[in-house]
Amino acid sequence: MTEADLPDVVRGEYEKPAWTRAQFEGELHHPQGWQFIAHSRKTGQFAGYLCGRSVADESEIIKIAVVPDCRRQGVARQLLQAAVRHMQCSGVTRCFLEVRQSNVAARKLYEKNLFHQSGVRRKYYSEPLEDALIFKLDLVEEKVEKEQE
Ligand SMILES: CC(C)(COP(=O)(O)OP(=O)(O)OC[C@H]1O[C@@H](n2cnc3c(N)ncnc32)[C@H](O)[C@@H]1OP(=O)(O)O)[C@@H](O)C(=O)NCCC(=O)NCCS
Image (cartoon, rainbow, N blue to C red):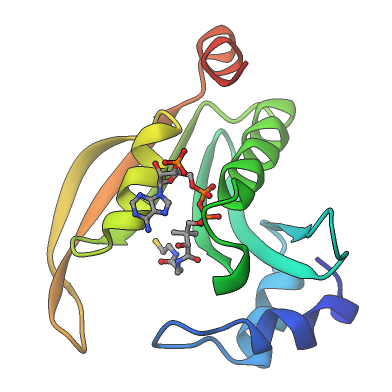
């Protein structure tokens, strides 16, 4: 992700609460931040993004979203695979993320990509008030590569 991608990224903020351009800029310039952008193979148009951060051997996926017209085509899976490759190359051994309990699409996405639920933060989200499920991915190199073949 670069500054040039930000208009597309901000326009693609369909879910609430939406991030502002300033928040994405903060992420772009965050010393521990890294991001990936996806474009449609057919049209070349912006399809989605993923923002992550790493500290030492631990990473967090801060945000992932795919534009509605491009969903259920494997875009998020490919963004996660790019993130996994990046984390493995950086010596990361575990990755965490938080997801709303009601977000079935995201939960299924993470489970399908070898994340497992490792905890719950009660009443973590507001509007509506909801628990956050904590998902963890252990980056054991052979296992991740084998499963993703
Ligand atoms: C969650 C999200 C990123 C998934 O993106 P996507 O590109 O459609 O996901 P993929 O096509 O890569 O799907 C991979 C797998 O995830 C699961 N999945 C994705 N969307 C799903 C849905 N709506 N219902 C059930 N399972 C779903 C499926 O197992 C799917 O595999 P399959 O299509 O072979 O069955 C997308 O729905 C989105 O942007 N949602 C809004 C933002 C959001 O909720 N982000 C996550 C915050 S934690």
